[in-house]
Amino acid sequence: MDAGSTLEAVILPNGEAWLVLHSGGQVRSAGRAQGVLNGAGVTATGILTDLTAGTTQALTVQATSVLPKSTLAASLSVLLPARSVTWAYNARYDTAVPVAAFAGHWQGSAGQQRIGATWDITAAGALTGTSTIGCTYTGTLAAHAQAPSVVKVSLTETCTSGTQTFTGIATMNESRTQTSYVLTYASGAQASFVAMQK
Image 1 (cartoon, rainbow, N blue to C red):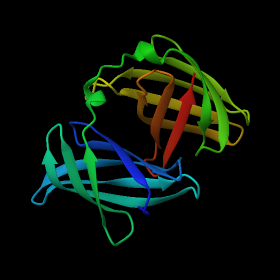
Image 2 (image 1 turned 120 degrees about the vertical axis):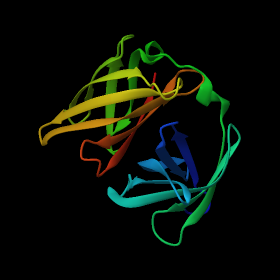
Image 3 (image 1 turned 60 degrees about the vertical axis):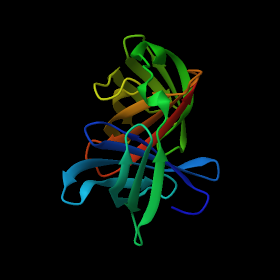
Image 4 (image 1 turned 180 degrees about the vertical axis):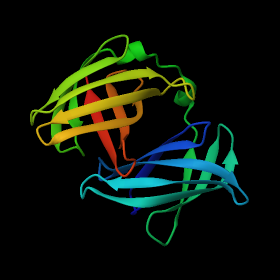
């Protein structure tokens, strides 16, 4: 992490962490890590993808201090040396956002933020859409058992170059006009970020 960057995380009770790195007013990186309890505490390992360069690196997050519903301090390692990070609890984490809240016509950016996309989502969570380069999207949103403010996402992108499948999570702002998706490829080797607005 560079000076001036901000790292946001959705950390679920099962140890799953979804990460978004902001810098210069834009989302620069996205990733996922899975935590396990060991002798050193909780260590999460996974990936962090640079959305501009399209490169992915191994990620390790070592929790150093946890105050429930307050703060989580950790050591973050992508490239050495490790950096320290402290996350503050956000009460919105416990505010339920039903799948039906995502219903509507959405526009934004996808494909490592390089292409425009339009998605339509039904109240039941069925997703269809297209992109500015001719790709099509189908998928589903479903309630997440681990957090009421998060929904699970399964997505298939079909382009002339082939088909990719993704899984991940989505969150919504308080006014319910913006949504953010952090997704990983089926291989788990790369992450992507999608930002949508009504």
